[in-house]
Length: 116
Image (cartoon, rainbow, N blue to C red; front, side):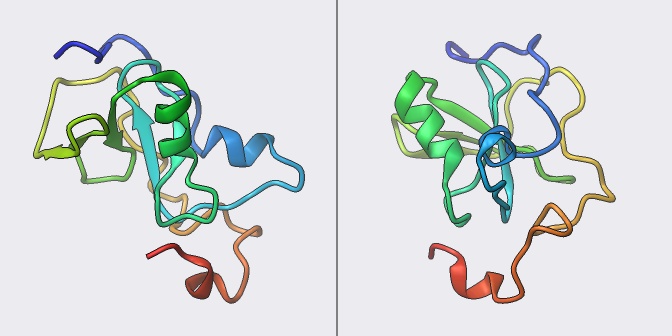
C-alpha cells in the first residue's frame, strides 16, 4: 500500500509526544504511523497525538500498537482495514506496559479525561 513503509521500526514504546512534553503526558491506547514509525496516542487519549501527527505530516495510515491488534486506519478515506502488511518489529508496546499508561503518570480520574 502506498504510504506504508514496512521497514521502519517504531519510534519507541510510548507516545513520543507525551514523553517529550513538559509535564509528560499519559495515554489510553497507542497508534503507530505506518509510514515513519511515529508512536502517538489514540483519539480517546487527552492529547490525541496520533491524529495530530497524521494531520501535520500527511501520513495517512496508522496501525494499532496494542498487543493482539493488527488493524490499520486510513485518515484520508476514514476507513479501517482488518489487517495490512507486516511491519518491522516490535509490533506492539511491551506486554507489561499497562493501559492506560505509563504507570505513575495516569491520574486517578483518568476515565473522566478520555475523549469519547
